[in-house]
Length: 394
Image (cartoon, rainbow, N blue to C red; front, side):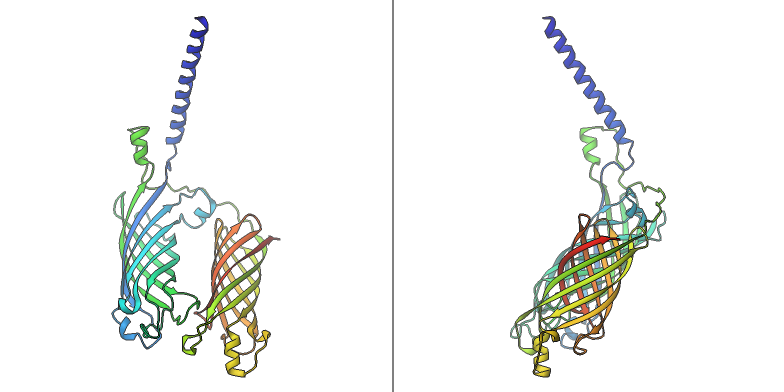
């Protein structure tokens, strides 16, 4: 009997201590002004015109385009250094649907993508954001010499979706924002299928954001009915630490697949390869500059030079170049932009200079994977690079 009483007393004491611990944990938790996860849903409408440099579809595109986007974003609080360095950005996933012209010729495209907003000129109730989005668009009506010969812009049903924007954000209440701005949208498949003039759409957008906190209703219903979690984050204003300037070497290899212009009548695909040696210097918390050497191989040059010179060697399909570049570092993600020129090639088939826009993801301390678009003669797509490599701090 005595043992049973002691056991019961110990059990009640344990329950009491557990309840006390839970109370203490909740007291500490609700002292955090950023408890939960602050997000917003954004609905935007777009309208504008096509920047088209062809002739066959001028009448098809003359009435412009209309589109709608639905985006869900996670908001940062400044807890990490890169968030404060970029003025508390937001990032998320989005859905796209649009009427870009005659649907019989162009289709009814939809898309899915990831996006990133970097605020600037921030005020209490009004600020601006630079936006970048990258993903895929599908349900396009591709070129077909028999059933869709007018479409000389899109050669595949699935393309890369790319969007850049400048957006104003006006705070209407704790819950709502009004957004407005300008943007440029690009569809392209990187010459994996031809024709590939691509579509470039420039216009304006407007919409609304609805803010919410995922933990708000859970706390009210299950923990503390008197507690109201904040809908918007409280920005952490801690000063940035001193920049650690670093140097890094990286080596990158990639492959791709291309098709010759459809006017040739050749439907075959050809392989491409890229090898890059890079040096980068980190000059801020989130940015670095650099320079490097490039080696390229384009199998489709074999057909081109056979028609032009009647004689082709393996070296004719290769080019050597050099570039300068910049990278924006977002934790493990890196947005890479580079501009380069050739110093060894057979002739001027590729133009005098090229661009590379790429998204890199760091793996561990030394590795990374990367997908990018390499261009020719400026902005014309040459091929998509799929690859990876290693990086070595100096």
